[in-house]
Image (cartoon, rainbow, N blue to C red; front, side, top):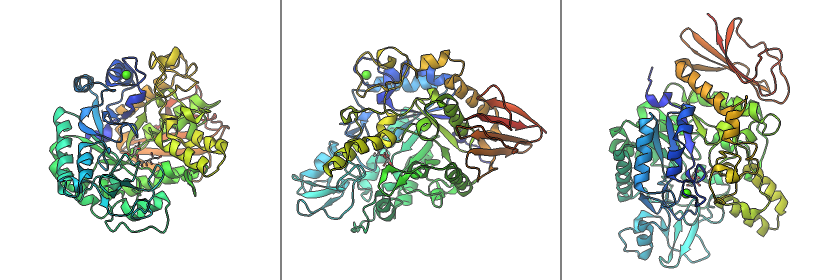
Length: 549
Ligand code: TEU
Ligand code: CA
């Protein structure tokens, strides 16, 4: 069996703006992360995925990069970065960075040069189309609202941006663009970083006809015109030859449109592209006809089916990543658990799921203390460009502000971006001043210090889970079997390898449940309640059993 280190690690995502502010400007920073290394290392995780810390005008919180070689002064200096990397490595923790190269910022030097004239050597770094102002080249919509084309007065042409107008898409058809990207990747890898999380990597090859679309639904557009485009695999294989294969690193691709049926084209062992992908299908599963802000309930049966099918499809040839939330989506305990009465057991249950599935788990900052969604009453308290577009577009069309706010409370990206809640002191111990986005008002109740003092610590439960996974190769590599696919409230599966079989029993409901789906003789390895009775599983009870031989 193929057992590279990246299959055996547990990842932890740090969203730097919201992790810890070391210098009292209200913005999380690199020294803030250094101060909290004990918190991270104490969990037992092996890899940090650090969100973008490059220079950026922050139109999309750093996913709009103006200098790939520079640390944003808000986050600190290159010395701070080097120190963080070294301190993590000393503790045995690897660091992977965000690689955001589907687009740059419009303030990047390449774009500034590109717009100057048709003869600029950087013109072909982006997609320019002639046209008349007000009449974009086609009807594609941008992900965060409006047309995907903006007319630039200096360039006297339209440029393509799948995201905001400050995120022009890079033209990967141009070999010089690819060369620049590879050089920049080598710069960071030569510093000793351990890999990349590749932002919307599925979108880097567009269909160059730029045809009008029969539908302006975003998933339709992606699937028909620019996700998994004609040359994406050629580009990734080239990237692997030129860069990735020369280092001992891990790569996680991300992007809309990668379905289970084609996942192994990206991550199949023999393909020499990526190690794993963050599959977004679950994240989009609740999108109604109106998209993400038109959410429909997700049934447990549909949830289980998705994971079963991905496990089967990816099989031994590829490798899954398992996550339930990140900086783009609601908090997992609010979305898939119960963030009220059963917040603690349901956060622990979801953790049990994350850490016992086949695939590399990724924990988002704050999940280890069960942080929840937030519901700011005033749109002025929101920061996310997607949320603001949605609200202003909606009110512009005459929709009820209260309905819009309700959807934002459920689905908005700022749910996951409020600062880490460290203590019950002002600003939750995140900062000494009012932070860039308000703290979730529930911080006096939900914070790291309080969790540590609790008899039902979520953090300590994660520690135990991670410890168990480390000791049990079966939980990493073993076969996965869904033992009761149709049960509407219980998720029961086994993980087995050789002589060893684990059973994981998860009650995804507010009521008690019974099951016969257990081995005749077993030992309880971990449980989030004091007692385990298969005939009376408690609300959100989670249990790991080991079958006795
Ligand atoms: O997100 C990619 C992506 O698929 C988004 O469209 C995601 O679906 C959206 O955030 C859902 O509302 C990545 C980054 O993670 C995100 O933060 C960036 O805004 C985006 O790319 C553009 O770089
Ligand atoms: Ca700061």
